[in-house]
Length: 223
Ligand SMILES: Nc1ncnc2c1ncn2[C@@H]1O[C@H](COP(=O)(O)OP(=O)(O)O)[C@@H](O)[C@H]1O
Ligand SMILES: [Mg+2]
Image (cartoon, rainbow, N blue to C red; front, side, top):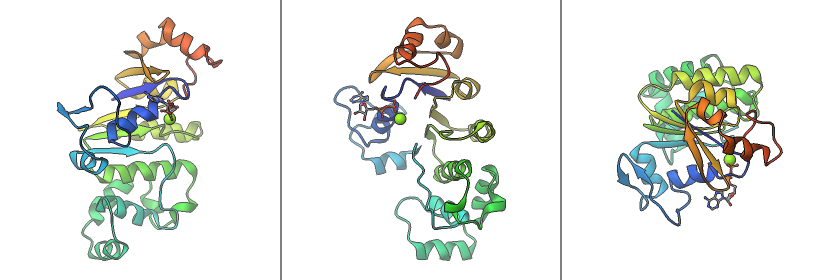
């Protein structure tokens, strides 16, 4: 579990885009399980086992919570007809139930996704990302816009989905990063500033300067 922090615009989302193949790096390599994947398109990378949960909410607002999860289980380019058939046939229902329970939305499975609270939408997206059974899960500010209570539940959720996979997490809430990440990478001005455990990072003058230089309170916000 690796946390990524850095002031707004420091390149965190750009790094994730380079990893999943939406941006081609002008130099350097992108290695996945030791293999250089620069030539793999985003679809191929997804098939290798990496999934990104976007910073921006991307659930299907007009569909039920359950249908969103079933779509996630079907992978790329699902067809609604097949979705319904599978839902009726019960093929993916056991897995869907397991996912919905793990994200705390089983009770809300028949709710229309667009009517969910902000935090619930975020958890639904994490559920959809998990449906692809990623070995590498990239979370870009999963608690963005959430209140304290929703953030605490997200910390708990991230901890629970952790076994058996690598998680890279961008998060500006330092308490969040501290409680979930084994190590932290600090980005600044599009590049690597430093990398280490929370205590090392917290007392690093360069990190403090990077944040204060942007006029933000030390250690409380990272964009
Ligand atoms: N390594 C980089 N190479 C080129 N452009 C970059 C790089 N890092 C950041 N940028 C530019 O800065 C902008 C903001 O970066 P972004 O990754 O969205 O920041 P963050 O997610 O840390 O707030 C990007 O849209 C891109 O134009
Ligand atoms: Mg970003």
